[in-house]
Length: 112
Length: 109
Image (cartoon, rainbow over all chains, first blue to last red; front, side, top):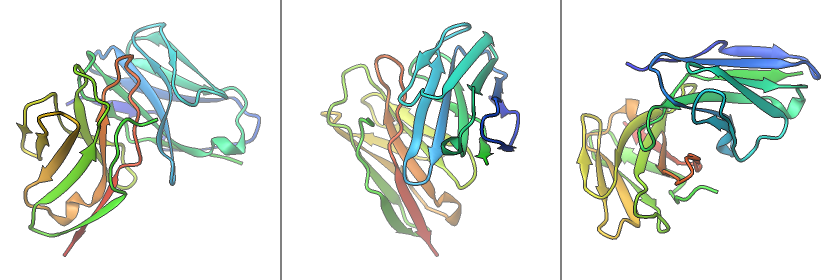
């Protein structure tokens, strides 16, 4: 079974802190994705990556950056956390185009 | 914006078939239809996908209309554990995968 692991289940950070959310997959998947999920808004795509060192903006990239130095790891970075970035963050990966996404269980981030 | 339209919620009696509709009238010829579900506090789980033929696996069946403008996910014998939000997605040519708000399915005992 594919395993997508997000490093923290719950995280509490202060406004202005730099925050790293880590995601690791163990199936040599090329594509990786970061979403955030908020009540009433569903899942919204922040960034995605086709392969190592590649990244593409999703629908809501503002306030975020990403890093993909190794194929198995995709990091989401909040350069200066703000309260409106309090959310559930979900990482996903997949192999070729038109194959299913595999999700991690999410990181619930609270920014105070 | 999501390329699919789903009803916000549905009810189904336990033991009956749950039929979840999805409209994707702008789907293009090489786009697949995917279904996922999300149980509270977990990441979405893949259920099934298809291009134009009907598909069945151990979890569900997917019926795609001949014109491919809509599809139906069928859970043949719904149980309380099938209570979840169900998402219908079509894959995008530039690989953005956009989720809509899905259908919240309530299984009634």
